[in-house]
Amino acid sequence: MSIKVTVIYHDTDTCVRALADAVAAVAWNTGADIRLRRLPEAEPAAPRDGTKADPLATVGDLTWPDVVILGAPARDGDVVALLHRLTRSATASATDAAARDMRDSWQRRSCEQVFGVFVTTPAPDTRHGGLMRDFAIIRPRSATDDDPHPRPSIATLTELTARTSATADPTLLSLDLARIQTRRCVEMAALLRAERVLVA
Image (cartoon, rainbow, N blue to C red):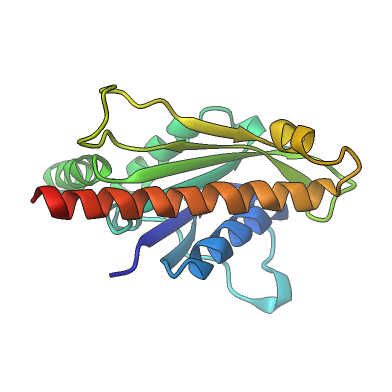
């Protein structure tokens, strides 16, 4: 069974959407099943090439995947607050009991999921008008972990630039960061799934 990946983005222009596209493409190229969604309350720019806007994310888009990747501009600050906004929006029309069941369902599922969070920063002279500044990966504790609270794995554009040529195209480096960390997310999810099968 393929690894399932939901990519959710929040932005008012094309920068985060373009990088979310890149993340989704990388995950798809690994053989994963993909959902690309936008965060409720976001007002995306008009879709390129006449395509329709991506669907709004729902709680179902959080409980379905093995990997959840959320992208937002640095100006939005706390990405955890964006996830809270998503769950509030998705359960707004439900009864109290149904909303509680939705949240409980995701809470149980999140213990098995890998989370990726990428943050962008404006860069007007680049191809997309912005760059992926950093990309953190948060994974659940596995049976082989000594530490009950595994630390996030964070990769930054600054670190990647330092390892390459200072004259390298920042847009390509930003896409490299997306590629490296997205593949790590999918690989971690596959390992965790295999571990659960062995333990079951």
